[in-house]
Length: 110
DNA sequence: GGCCTGACCTCAA
DNA sequence: GTTGAGGCCAGGC
Image (tube, rainbow, N blue to C red; front, side, top):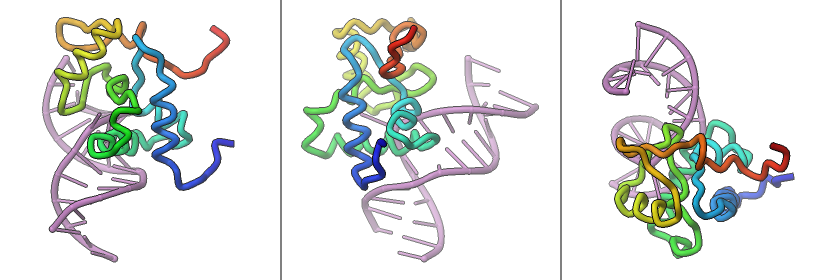
């Protein structure tokens, strides 16, 4: 029901916007929720597009990191700064504790 | 159309 | 822990 419209990017943006503050998500996770399993790269590409789009101020791209719990974006310093201000803690090595800050989506039953 | 690159992921060594 | 190789798809030339 996620529809198969050509608005794949909008779908990704929508999911990224759903990530609550103080939490982060991974490219693969977003891709999966968007209905594109295995296409994590597209998510990264879509977010990269934000750097050159008007949505850069509407989508919290900084809450998206790689599966390793590390920042891949070129502006890692900025991203980390924002995440820390949101409450996300980083390890001495620059890793995020995915076990605590990863947003797995709308999972009601825990 | 083809070729290279990329804000990725997973498996194997 | 790291590095290498394969797979995925969208731009730019």
